[in-house]
Length: 82
Image 1 (cartoon, rainbow, N blue to C red):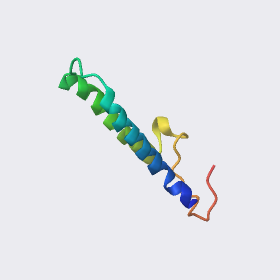
Image 2: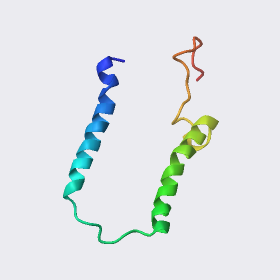
Image 3: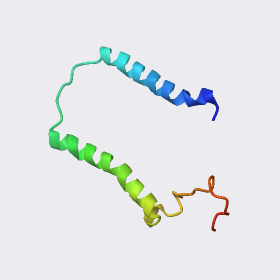
């Protein structure tokens, strides 16, 4: 990969984080707080989702079959199976 692009994505993330931090100074105070149970009902499924996708991809079946292919054709010399 071109060396310019190697730093492009981290630079974009850093710029976004800096913008987010700077914009946080001009906001109103929180009117009400969310309960712990309500917050966990959003966070726990979001944290489990990547694990479930990874599990489906590594097992090679289920609803991800044909969507996520684990393919080492770059390092292998043999042709891909159809």
